[in-house]
Length: 197
Image (cartoon, rainbow, N blue to C red):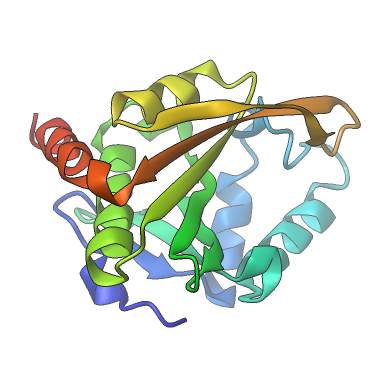
């Protein structure tokens, strides 16, 4: 499935398909331990470069995770890369997709960037692709992200207990949220208000 990234541009952020030339900057940005506090996706230790290379190679593999497209998130004002996100588990037959693997540099946490990024992705999924369902999976310990998903209108469907292992060997729970096509108009209105506030 191809994505028209020209439709993924807002007032504050725009998304660009992840490419090898982004790797150096992303690796540098990803060295902040605060980003990985709950997921432990990347451990900041002597193996970081190997972990980051593997993480980015998987993100660039369009066939991984049931079909995916990874994006870098850039600020409109200065073109600075401030994070990453993905559409994954793309199921055109069932008209379902997941949004996740999203991270931002801490300097922009709580700002408008994530809200507008979600608005752009959700608008694309529901209005351009015509999908029926978006799923968002959040680490059980990441209360801040869970509240953010609920705030935009994501419905908590449940908790997958001991759902998997983090790279550090600890078990993790995963909280599942969804947004359905019929919920999209209300979610869209809420997101637009949040972005314009």
